[in-house]
Every structure is written in C-alpha cells, then in structure tokens.
Length: 304
Image (cartoon, rainbow, N blue to C red):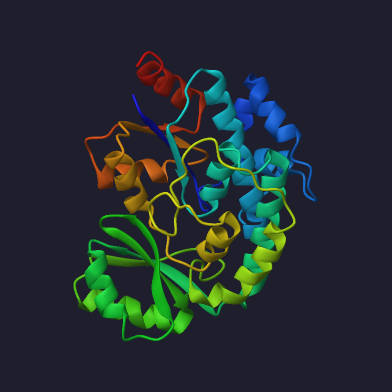
C-alpha cells in the first residue's frame, strides 16, 4: 500500500503536544532533546504558556519538533511513506523527515522563519480569512479587482483562505458574502501569510536558508507552491513558498493520482485529516496526534 505522510501547519499547536510520545518513546525523546535553540522547546510544547506557544516564532519550531518526534516513532514501528507533504510550516517538517535538513538545522531554520514572519508586517495592518462553500475560481473572480488581497491557501474544496491588507480582506469578505459564500471567517493570525506582502521577508528567509547544508531528499516531496513534485533549487522553492499560495488539496490530489491509498497526518491537531476527507472521501486518513491515534493507524496499516 502506498502511503502519503502529511505534516501539520501553524495554528494546530496546543499546550501539551508531543508529551505522551516523549514519555513513552525513545525516538521522540531523541528529537526533542536535540532541539537546541534559544528557547526551551520542550517546556513551551509541554507546559506553555499558551500565549507564548501561539506566537509565530515559538509555534513554528515547536510544531516542527513535535511532528518530527511523532514521525520518528511511526518510522520505528515499520511505517514508511511513499510521499510526504505539509501545509505551509508543515512543508519544513516534511523536508526534514525526507532528509533535506538535519533535525537541528530544521528547528533552527523555522525558529528564524517565524521571527522573520512576525517582524515582516506591522501589527493590525494585515489579516486572513477562510471562505467557506465557494469554489476557488469564483473567489478569484470576486477578489481580482480588489488591490491588496490574494488567495493564500487552497485547503480543500469548499475552504479557501484569502490574505492581504486588513482593509482589502474586509472589502473582499463582504463582496464574497454578497456573491454567495456561505461564511467568511476572520482567522486569528498575526499577519497576511502567503501573500506578496512578504516579498521582503522572503529575501531574509533566503539569506537564512543559504547558511545551511541541504541534502537530496530520500522520499518524494510534494510542494506547496505547485501541488506536485519539483525539480528546482530547494532554497528558491522555499523562498517562493513564504509569499505564494499553498496548493494543499492539489497536493493531495496529486499523491492520489500517483497511487497513494492512505494518508497519515503527523503533528498536533486533525485539520489536515478533515481537508483530505473533503478532497476525496474514498481515501482513508489517520491522524497521529496521540498514542491512541498511533495505535489506530498501526492497526490499520502495519500489515498492509
């Protein structure tokens, strides 16, 4: 059976994430214990406080560390993916798991990425909103005449996220509701992620990425910028990713077209599992956010 492993993005974090795996599995302890950066990743993951964990520059290394710890536990149980992908930040988890970055380097990179993103946009000037029950083509048609707003995330059919200046997103939200969107929900984020407003931030990220050794991946990676595999320079791809739309459900469709028969969601939360189900209900998806979730996944896939 071909398996796609998908890694959680920012917004999925919660206090206590990863602790059960740390307590029970050496593979998880090995990952957490090598998270040697300027913050105590274990303490923030396991104890919070929540307002600190929710800050972009803390959330990103904490989610990545938790995700890699869980992935290493799954690997030790004999489950090996044929493809990997992740939602935004989760792409770095996928790349680290696939061998593009050493674990410690990946944690350091996303700590700096989070800082760059936090510093990039003045507080309160930009925003994002989820548009429900309207197809992507109609959303694009409605927002195209509005300066300062673009599509950020293609999460799943029926859930598209827009991003941009606060004023532009507010105008777009009203226009979309008038055009028939079921709901437009403002998101609790610190800025307009995956928008052209992060152009300058992308240059800073590129400078950071150039400090690290990057290796050829050992597993095929499906990328946010296109929803498929890419042959280009990884630094260039990730520089584009921070300011470009995330083609997540297209990534799921691509992996299914390549023969993937089941997905395993890695990391805190179950958002990606919901996106997969809304993209293709015929494909089983297992969320591994707990020991119970791990055991359910192993029971279903280990003997396949």
